[in-house]
Length: 178
Image (cartoon, rainbow, N blue to C red; front, side, top):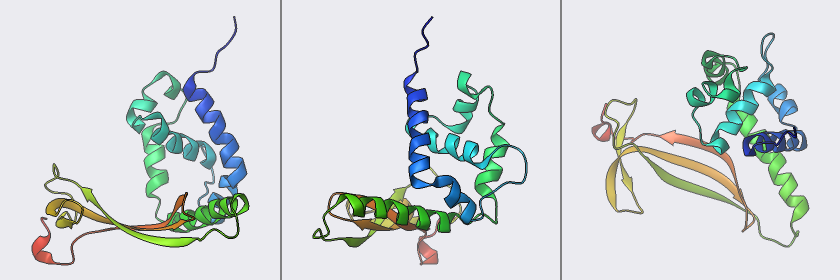
């Protein structure tokens, strides 16, 4: 019988090529994101990265057929919440690598800019989330429950690469809901 790759298997194999091109493993190691024993960092990171493209939550992916051989969810949450891992440094280093790749593909005449974006993360259903506030949504012209997502990004006019971000609450205590 001929084995056919499912779309998710093809997606995961293409992530492997992407990770090699961008040297994700080296970047994770350089940013202090490493483990001394247990599951490899690249395996954990690969699963977490693929979730966004597969449209599944960690819980649903682990409980699916593909998740039978994977470690438990606690492994992933400990990995994401480890206090000594420098995720901000990882994001900056990865953004620099991606920008270098784009630079090689585009004309030197093209204008390159940094963009600051202050989008609103709406959390209208939340009532007791930490630092939840009434924030003004400039696009709708109303106050909503949520946070302000401040993003610094690089652009060449066609591509946008997020370089850094911060999730902000309201500076006014009167606008904070909790």
